[in-house]
Image (tube, rainbow, N blue to C red; front, side):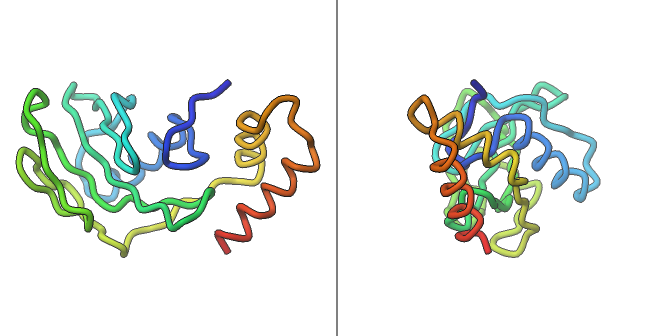
Length: 142
């Protein structure tokens, strides 16, 4: 079974792709390689330079769509950090990118959502129930 994060049906691999696409637009050479921890709609990622980035996601009240609200570099990973819910960084954070509510939305494919529901529904998963949940998820995202 795949590991899913609180950012709805997005897997670790898919979240890394989304964050790396956003980092590519900033012209920085840093890229994320793995997730260190996740809490609600924020995740801490490890980078190729062995530093940590804190990424805030905006979920759009949807299972299949997210947006990167802000990406911050954690200055000292042994100290606490603060942030605002609109994406602005606070203590111990250096802002690399802050979209707020204006960034690009990323959406999953139907196959990815179908796989998510077939793995998270009580087993054995009823195919009709899985399809109904997939239709509902895309209905919420439309």
